[in-house]
Length: 255
Ligand SMILES: Nc1ncnc2c1ncn2[C@@H]1O[C@H](COP(=O)(O)OP(=O)(O)OP(=O)(O)O)[C@@H](O)[C@H]1O
Ligand SMILES: [Mg+2]
Image (cartoon, rainbow, N blue to C red; front, side):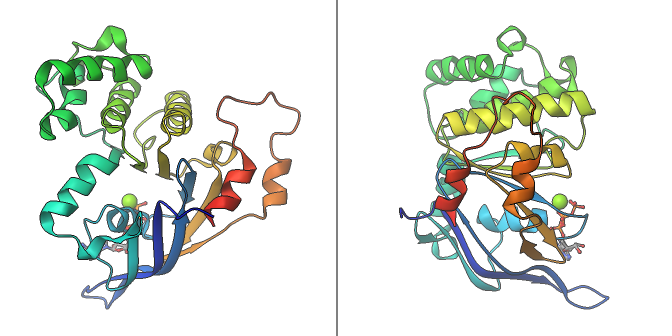
């Protein structure tokens, strides 16, 4: 079996709080394979965002390890950690986090410019990435002239433009209505995979279960598998296969 892309082993992150210690992430082990889509469900405060911050190397675990392509993130220098985030990761947030004064194309080009890509090349790649999320016609719109779903698709284009290995998405449909959320989930379950990127998708939206290779549940800092595979296979029987149907053999490779 090939080396996992991302591997957390017995990772713990505790916070001190006036009410006592909060076990935000408590003995979590997780292996994510290249191109895999892992969905993480769980109630508010269960540690989902903290887990993503560990994967991004923005937080170091108090115990245990977080490795990307075999390298311990906590051992990276500041410069290496920054390079890791700029070249290997793409982020998608609940609140889109687009720069208000910049057009969609300028927002999408930003990660490339931060890496030192030439302006004209960055612009071309940004336009291509916007085309990929169906927004070629909105490239010159500033965020306030885009719908919520368009803003999130712009953010997905921005996350993907640098050809990252891993997309970290934190409640990407949390600010969207159900229908728009469905579109965004479809984009997130198809595009990264098509480009060989793995995705960790934190969501309250249980509809992701059909598209994900694996669905995990976070509760009180612990990560578990909520449903036996046989139940998930039974879901949606008789319905047409969607473009984001998963390949069940992939999840086995990621464990
Ligand atoms: N910087 C911090 N200092 C102290 N406690 C924190 C800090 N950040 C998070 N926590 C606590 O850690 C726990 C996990 O928080 P986290 O933000 O990871 O949860 P979450 O699952 O993302 O929640 P939500 O669904 O509301 O976004 C919570 O109890 C939270 O209050
Ligand atoms: Mg959160």
